[in-house]
Length: 295
Image (cartoon, rainbow, N blue to C red; front, top):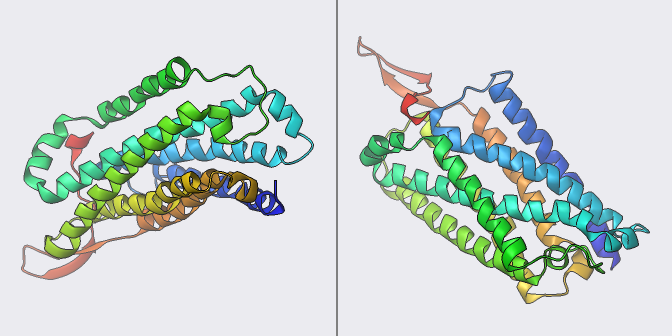
């Protein structure tokens, strides 16, 4: 392995740690200290923050293993690759669940923008807990693909620690194709959302709806730059691991850092709207509109 790969992966160990700190602090501010007011329109985003926190934690351990594999510990991880698998595969699996959730968020935001009346009429019939349960249930399919269809081998020693090597070519090919399809759908839906917001939508949205739309666009931007493009580069340059290390993991964790910072800024931003009082006076005030039927 080249020196460039060692340097890149050593630096990248800090990326998931930073995103853990930011997302952990953000969740504490919302649910423990309550310094950021919760909003029903953002319930799906709160669940995504938890996914991001979990993936960041597992990725942190995975990046440490990648770093140790470049030292004298390499033979240990090659001989006991089941230990590496315990952290490499969950990142892939949770990333798939997260992508499904982001797709549902993009659909949610796009429908709310294009057909708002029908959306607010029927959206309340689908509780957030049902959506999260449906997302988590896909893990059954993911486990079946890994162990029944692809039959990942955990007993045979390997000579590498990359996801391609640990998860096996069969599962990695399935994961890449399925992820790229999800990312493409998310990007397409978000483009429709952007077109509606920037060219046709003149409505005076509440602060929470604006924040939800902005978070959806941030998700799509990060996915395109840090999740959609790196696997394409991986398919073109098959031996990239020797030169840059676990580039997919590096890009994903760097994307978490950028997204966590942008999300933190957006969540703490106060929107001001124009309000006409009963006396006819026009004032500017911060507002949070509540829709309890989303609960």
